[in-house]
Structures are given as C-alpha cells and as structure tokens.
Length: 293
Image (spheres, rainbow, N blue to C red):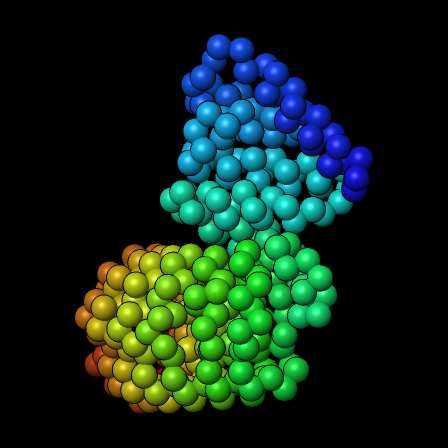
C-alpha cells in the first residue's frame, strides 16, 4: 500500500515537472484519456493532476482521475478508497456521471461506527444497521465525506440533522425503522442517488423531496401513504419507484414525465383498473407491477 502511494506521488511530481509552457488543461485531459486507453494509469493520474492544477474546477478531470486511481488499484491488487474524494470533487463541480460511478464503486468498503471514527475523513461508507438505534446523533458531523449510510433495521424515529453534516450522501438506507416524518430539509442531499424508506410509518412525502433530481432508486414500500407529491415528475432520474403496500388510489399526472422510469411497483394499493390503464398509456416503456383484481 505504501509503495503504491509513493508511486502515485512520483508520477504526480513528474507531471508537474513536465508543465513547461503548456497551460491548456484540455491538453493534459486528453493525454490522460489516451493513457487510460493504453492502461497506463499512473501516467493518466499524472496528466489529470496537471489539468486540475491549471483549472481547479475541471470536474471531468477529477472524474477520470478517480477512474484511473481505481483501475490502478485493481491492477495492483488492492482497494484504496481515496478515489472517492475525486468523485466528490467531480460532483461538486457539476459532473453528474460522478454520482452514479461513486454509487457503483464507492461502497465496497463499509465501516462500523467505531472503526469509522478512527479515520473520519476516509469513512465514505458506514453501516449501523440492526443495532437498536432510535436516533441519528450529531456524531455524524465528523464524517464530512460520507457517501453511503446503512441505518436499516433499527428503531429510528427521526433523521437528526444528517442532511446538514453529510452533504455528499448518495445512498441512504433507512428501511425497517419507525420513521413517521420526513423533514423537508432532506432535499439538501442534492447528490442522493438511492433512498430507501421502506417499512416505516410515513404518512406524507414533503413536496421538497421532488427537488432530489439525482435519485434513481426510491423505495417507499410498506408505509401509510395515500398520495405522492404532484411534482414527482421533477425527479427525472428515477429508474425504480416502489410504492407497494401503501394506501394510494391515484398517481399524479406528472408521473408521465419520468422518462427514465423502468419499474413502477404498485402492489398492495387500492388502485382501480382505470388508473392502471391510464398509467400504462402514460408510461408505455415502464414495467408496472400491480395486483390483478
């Protein structure tokens, strides 16, 4: 591990020395992309680092440097989660593909809370599931780079203020708890990609939740919902929407705007055949799962 870090530093320094008079970040960006194609990941890291040194907010360079770091680790036979920091920077600077890629790669190494506290800046994924916890305390304020939290199967009744202390969360699992209220402030988690609130006691979804435009997987199964926000159509990234085992009779018209919706689960709701027929017409490419009446 230490040797690999030294190699990364060496190639980064080599890149700095090769700067000469070229101050075009795209030149180094393109060189880095060519290096990835050649599987020369260390050289790619060096070139992306040069691009970033010239233009600090070059999101695509952070993204591809993260990819290079991960591929280098795989090639060398180790997992180093440091690449998550580059994905976070890519997200901050507006490169949307970084969210899905971080979801795919950044959750491979999860820590229990005590272990995470030893290196809070590198605690990207934390698992506190099945620990009989009834509230998310303020101790999460030290995990500023947290991207994934599994707090399922506890006795949680509220979310605390995690939406203030952990702004980069992309995966939040709150399934199988006692949550009855979803704060509007949850919409602050602008990079949220997966939200699981299944098997809770939620009766109402705040309209503000539809501002979470990056959410691809939304699980609201097994709650006490009678309706969902009329502006659900704003959440255009949704691929899977699970509303099963609720008390919903009708869905808002804007659901037809969910152009990426692959699966809609409605089983266990008192929805009429007429409504199902309308949904099939509005969502012709979506798999709709419902009870046959």
